[in-house]
Amino acid sequence: MTEMAHVLVAGASRGVGREVVKCLREQDQTVTALLRSEAARAELEAMGVAIALADALNVEAVEAALLEAPPIDALISTIGGLPSEGERADYKGNKHLIDAAVKAGVKHFILVSSIGAGKSVDALPPHVLEALGEVLKEKELAEDYLMASGLPYTIIRPGGLLSEPSGGEAVLTEDYRVAGSIRRADVATLVCQCLTSERAKNRVFSAVDRSKLYGDPAFEVFSFT
Image (cartoon, rainbow, N blue to C red; front, side, top):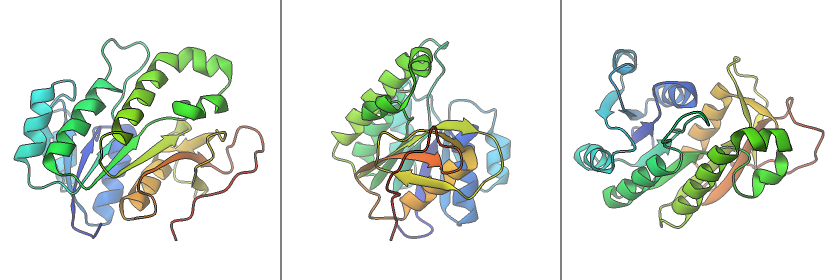
């Protein structure tokens, strides 16, 4: 994808989504943030980001936001919820985004999921799975739905998320047995790299910091070149 393409980011109000928006704007990408409330509008607009309002759990609102916006080249979703929340967006919200992206002719859908979804369940200790099990099941359903949608996709499963400054040791791997922690800003950098990489399409990655691995596993790092 070339610079100045139109990228829609769902989940841009905070966390990894906000870091993704920062990264995209640093690259002069045209960005629309999909928000479910006005709370983050002023901050994002100050960054040069357009705003579309829609709750991902409302299928009609999501379709309207995507189909009424200028043509969207890529959609990045970082939406999700906590185990304590009731109806979460991890599966249902992402399903609505995927369906709308198909109708809108989106060329690349990047889903930020989590280590512990799919086969990477083997990488996490039992106490973590017990705490996050329901959320991870929903994330796995979203991954499966995206892979079956026909959209060109990239799925990125970060490890435990940290709010520290970028450490420069973050990597992607297709080895689902790897787990560890990673800074949110570094996840965003990897997402932005995948956005412009043909090699990253139709792949599922785990994202970790090489200095913050669980154990000392040997694994192959994904190369964008």
